[in-house]
Amino acid sequence: MDNSSSPRRVAVLGSSGSIGQSSLEVIAKSKGQLVPLLLSVHRQTDILAQQLRQLSPEHLPRWIAVTDETADRSPLEEFAKNIEIAVGHEALCELVRHRDIDIVLSAIVGSAGLTSTLAALESGKTVALANKESLVMGGKLLTDLAQKHGGRLIPVDSEHSAIMQALCSWRMEFADATVRRSVDDLGIAKIILTASGGPFRTKSQPELENVSVAEALAHPTWKMGKKITIDSATLMNKALEIIETRWFFDVPAEKIDVVIHPQSLIHSMVEFIDGSVIAQMSPPDMRLPIQLALYYPHRVLGIASKIDWTKMQSLELYPPDFDRFPALLLGLEVAASGGTAGAVINAANESAVSAFLAGRLPFLDIVKVCRLVLEHHHFESAPTLEQLLAIDRWARGEVERFVDRR
Image (tube, rainbow, N blue to C red; front, side, top):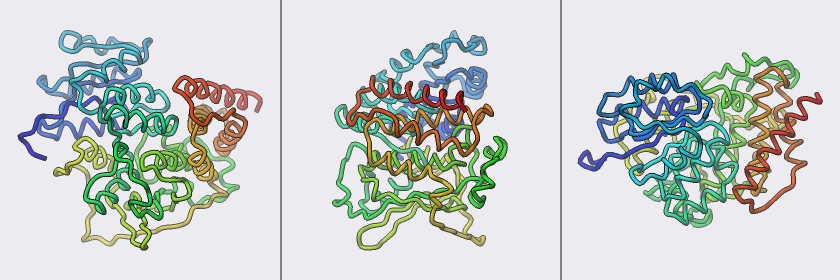
């Protein structure tokens, strides 16, 4: 990137999470090319205060936002003279629309990230999307807004970043949600998402019956928050990524495959109609796709770890077991259906994972209840935002009723 160019002013939504913290590392190492203008958390104000103390005075953000109005804001009092503090989701949405923000990194966990992502796209922003739930819930809504207002969606998930890079290597340019090329025009035969397989890749069905929370949280490769770690254990994270792929790259569900790759060095692959396959490889380090998204469309010297080619490497690829991990079939079905199906499966999963973490639901029932709720919902093919939020609430209520009856 040209060092003489103006700094990019970044909003990091969800700065207390693992993606948010990695993003601040990337920003800190940018030598002033990336400037944090807005940081937001839900209620972890102590972590936000710690992050602010680590920034030099000249690099303090202009705004910080706390979306939970009941959160303790006392840890932030020392910054009140120099930083404007906003409270609530609506205040955050107003801030992301501000003309001085160039790029919004959406890393709020779960459906809570939808409204701020939509607000950014409505104002024509570039959105580096780590909040996969937004695209799962409202894929058509988001991509239509990006096109209408000149916004742009850039993937931060390592799998979708890999797909983008594979397409870049073919066309010498990035494919993104503002440039809608047909699958046929790109010559794509398959998009192949890789999955580590999580902590239970080799466990039998009977062994999965009594999985504990501690076992499910022991991911062998990635260090992530609790919710996404459980999603990785059920492979629901890959189901959500299938749906995300359908919207990011405008590709039908039947052209999306999943393979199990325990080493997590290959992040995804694109197979073309002539049989060529382009894969993107790097160690499992989220700082790489974050940096790529924030500097889009440039590459710069990175702080992420690199493959040591002087050491022996082993690359294993296995077909997924749909019987042991039925979440994958759910993902393919929802990607094919579109409409309200994504919002239902996302909300049901969030509620089921919370119940599992609280010891109220067995591990195998997470996906089971998601399917039950999906099959019993009233499908809408072109939902509005209000309908998506309503179906989100309904699905969570259905899971709670299931758990209570159980």
